[in-house]
Image 1 (cartoon, rainbow, N blue to C red):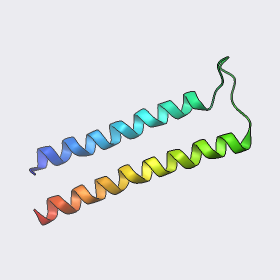
Image 2: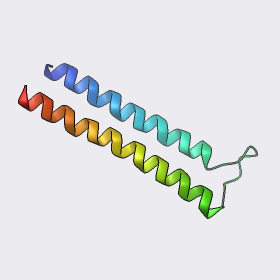
Image 3: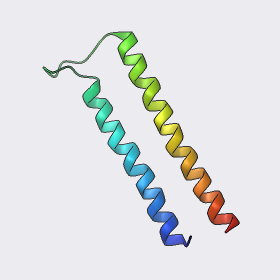
Image 4: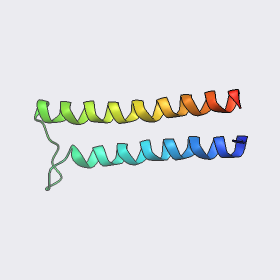
Length: 70
């Protein structure tokens, strides 16, 4: 992997994170656009988002490691 591919793969990971963040904004609102206030529902959404973001961050770390070991 060259540095351009590494950069592209970083971008892809962050692009997925940004997409998921925008999806969460939608998930935190009901069909009428009102914010969901049920703490349990919001908590589940937050936990899911954190898990997904952590996976992408782990991928970024592994990409850097792979590039360095190159």
